[in-house]
Length: 269
Image (cartoon, rainbow, N blue to C red; front, side, top):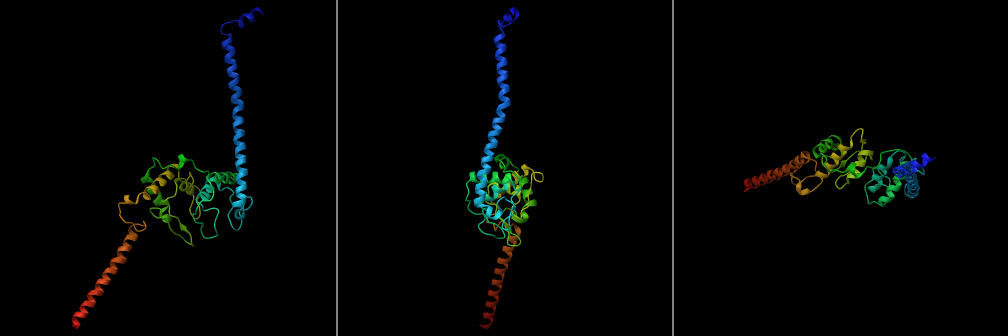
């Protein structure tokens, strides 16, 4: 007992006790705090899914089914992911105004907060492409030249070389990309809306998507910076050659007609 009392009176005893207390407190926090945070996140996600389901029931279920399974009026939403929801609803394409060959872009009727709730609910139906972060779709520091090469190889067949869109078969069309946000362009590449093929990160890495976004923004930027002057739909030398052919040939026909009429008149006199 005397030895134990002597140890308690040791000058370092208080320091040892304090260190043990701090270690115990830190250990308990490490064990219990993450669980509390995870539980709070899970609760918030559950609430978002519940609220999103309410919005879905009112605005989407009539076409896509009560559980997103799809109907004759709308495809299944199981596995489309939050990126597809953010694109379709965030560009006003959904809810659709009326059936047709292709749903056009129109005024957005949902707030971003509501779109996030819808995304949470539809994502709960099945895993799919996730809404990208600002860092993923930001064109800052991207390679515009490489984006141009990628765009011409993968996108120009439908959207033409400067992204101004064009007609497709069966009443469908590739929309004009001018004014499209980087986020929605990225999501379109992720999900492949309408006739567009999808380009997941396994096929087209994130950096290449950012390069394409930078190219689209550059060619659809300041019109006064176009070194080609007045453009004719942005279709390149084919359209410009057609313009020269039609108007040039027309002028030559007009001149030839005028000369023939003048010569005939001179002979009569």
